[in-house]
Amino acid sequence: MNTHVSTAGSSKRIGFISTRFHGTDGVTLEARKWAHLLRDLGHSCYWMAGLLDVPPESGQEVPLAHFNHPEVAEVQSRMFGVASRPRAVTNQIQSIKERLKDELYRFIEQFQIEVLLPENILAIPMHVPLGLAMTEVIVESTIPVIAHHHDFAWERERFTLNAVNDYLQSAFPPLLYGMEHVVINSMQQKELARRLGIPSQIIPNVLDFETLPPGIDDYNRDLRREIGLRDDDWFILQPTRVVPRKGIEHAIELVRRLKDPRAKLVISHPGGDEGNAYLAMLHDRIEDAGIEVRFIADRVGNVRGKNGAGQKVYTLSDVYPHADLVTYPSHYEGFGNAFLEAIYFGKPVVVNMYAVYARDIDPLGFKTVEMTQLVTREVVEQVRALLHDQSMREAWAKTNYHLGLQHFSYAVARRKLAGRLANLFGEGV
Image 1 (cartoon, one colour):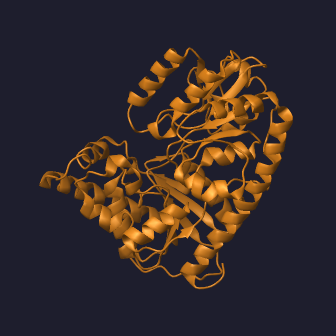
Image 2: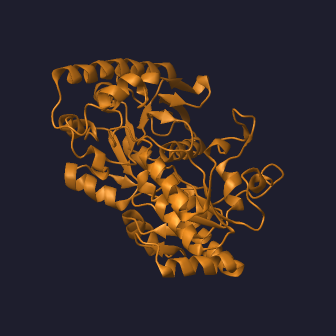
């Protein structure tokens, strides 16, 4: 393949690559935002993933690139939780890698890609063959790269014991010429430099704070009724996937201790890729607590419409305006999309002091109810006071929105993205 040459001042054809660009997971949401910002800067964006929800004319869906593809899931299951791998597993990894390289080259050639933008596939080893394929294509093609890292292997306990450390060292992430590394928090930046000697730039998760949030309209006005809530109920929203690190058991405990029949917990997202044991445990906690919880993932999607049962589907932008309080008791987050969404929509937040929040967000001065792994009496009383005091909620919302605009707006990311492109091509873009 010929080396790609592009002039800095021209618009670029940028190829986003990941295991999936579909649904409301954090990587998909941030990739869509980056694409929007890059189009603002005059560039064209194209997509390749194992699961894709873009028009065919701008994307290439490759089922083998998804971490849930049966062949991929089977070989991944033999990499982690063990200390060695048989030769047959190595051969299987290499076979999948070579087929994915063919698909990557086909994508690059079909859309005449000038900049590659791997989204998280060179950071977290959810799909080791795809990371290896991506690394080799970067080396062989010399196409400039902005690698966007959201989660690293060392941040997940389940990857600690593994039989693929050779691959992790070489491709998660690789240190290559013509490659910009972007992380989403300062802890990742320091760890990436300390562990691998790789320099990086921070571009935090962002939202369009320059545009006021949508509110209640004719379409979403009936949402409370549709999910079984009354107008005077306290709509307590947990806007995350149902996975252990989200700490949803704390939200259940908070609602239990409010001891008010109006308090209803609403969980907007489905489970993740970590099995069903956590969901089963939550159902046991809910039964023991004797509270009402609504799981509404089947009613929330990327766009308004109908689900398979013919029921109305809402977006997250339809859900947030109805919430009285947002719970965000995560044990760990790479950044915190749900936190930004809550302050964007002017909602008070109960947030666990996870490390990235404590280091990068809390010092900025946001007004929140903070907890440290425990739902204490003080946390419960502060929440109860907020739910009874609309003027306090409005004052917090005003302060938080201003801080969001200052630190986590599209303008911030647009400027930093332009800088990464300028670095790749040697002059202003």
